Image: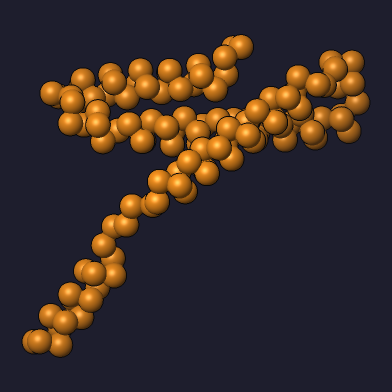
Length: 115
């Protein structure tokens, strides 16, 4: 029995949740913001007349995918960062959902200010 309890204790210790360092979150946020801004700049630089040839569709399509992916990840990262404080300040699940939706809308507007 003691061997089983020892294994269980080792597994519990090994599988304990670990919070990532603050610097990692900041680096990830900076990288995602840079990717989204670069992809937006790439899209703004394209002329509509160049889109007649399907061979020219690859770069704008890739820029759209990068913008959407990086922007979504950036919004999720920023909203998740505020989630713990929102849990403590909300009285109900409905209030927490309302705060979360407002945070999502606010961050989306911050990432895409021209839209």
